[in-house]
Structure formats: structure tokens, C-alpha cells
Length: 269
Image (cartoon, rainbow, N blue to C red):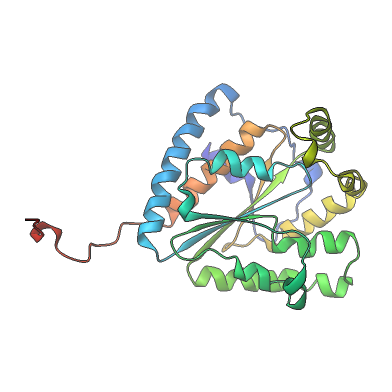
């Protein structure tokens, strides 16, 4: 699995052509073998989250991006299932409204950055401001093109101040997206998830792919790397994300803080 993870990482400044990546790829991992690995990863994540919470000096920010139906909600549900809810905050970023529109585009994002000891999960993120605003011409190219630099600087500030950042682009094929949309229409329990806007946005597929490619090239850095996760197979998506999260937290070398007093001398009458 370690070899597969290294292949998913986007090196800084590397040009990415998503057409060269197979969203069905499982990098040699078999589904029947994945269940036990995922189970062990989730157990390890629970332990590492406890250490992060106890240390309370650093935070982990997880960014999830992907085209509609790529599996952002499913990733959160299946990979974060064993974590203590007290130490996790999920923030969905939708169209800015109210006070958000009266500030710069990063204001609401910085406000959602996890506090020390916490894991923050962004379901969509500040990257919408180089994706949807670009595809729909909401701001001029002279504006959104500057945001790659601004975002990199923003993430550098976070990383230098104790926030480790890991970013996942969940990559599915256009056929897989159609399959998932049909499933939402066929299942009455999932009808609420379907919007007519989904069909409209699908017509911009090629424009989104180009925007994603530029995002990955411009904003995968040593401090805040992007990983492209082949996500047609949900089980591989969950496995890969869990493995990367475990490795990221272990790289942080988190340890329990020393007790405030010599516990060996404490006695209860």
C-alpha cells in the first residue's frame, strides 16, 4: 500500500493530466484484502486522534475536493466513523452568503480552521474560488489566477503555525458520475441529494477537469500536498484516504503531554 500512496501524491509544480489517470485503478490492492487494512487504519486513526487531542499543540486540516458525486460525504462517513466527534469538525463550503460576501474569500475559511488538538474536515473548500468561479466566469481570470499564490501563502501560514494540511482530490469518471446520479434518482431515500443543477454542472465537465488540473499543479506543495485518489471504487477511495491520514498523523510524531503533577505521589483517602 505504501507504494500506491507514493503514486497518488502530486509532486510540487508537476503538470497533471487527469486523462492519464485511471479512476478505476486500485494500484494492485484487492477488495477482499482491503477490509482488514481499513479496519486497522480506523483503529490507528482513533489512537492518533486521541494523542492529537491530548497534546493540544497542533491540528490537522483535511481538504476534500471533487466533482459532483465524487464521494466527499461518503469518505467522511466511512473514514471518520471511528473518531471522537468532540475532536472533529466538518465544514461544508457552499455559495457565500450574508457576512461571508462582505469579506475576502479566505475569511470564512480561516474562521473554520481547526483549533489545536482538533481535526478539521473541509467538504469543498477555499479551492472553490479557483474552480467554480473560474468555470462560470464569476470573476475575471486576472482575479482567480492570483488566488493560487494567495492560497499557497495562506496554507504556508497555517502550516508554520501548527496546522498540518493534507488535501484529497477524489477523481471519478464521467460515466461513474452518471451512474451515481441515476442511483440517486432510483432510490427514494436518495432523491433529496439530486438537484437539477447537477445536470447543468455536468455540461461543464471538461472545463472543471482543466480547472482541477491547474489547481493540482499550482497548489500541491511540500507543506500542503495534494493526493489524487482514483475514486470509482468506493472501497479503494476509503482505504487510500485512511492510509494517507494515518501516515500523515504518524509523521507528526505526536506524543502524550507530561502530567501536571507527579502522579506517583498522589493519594486518595
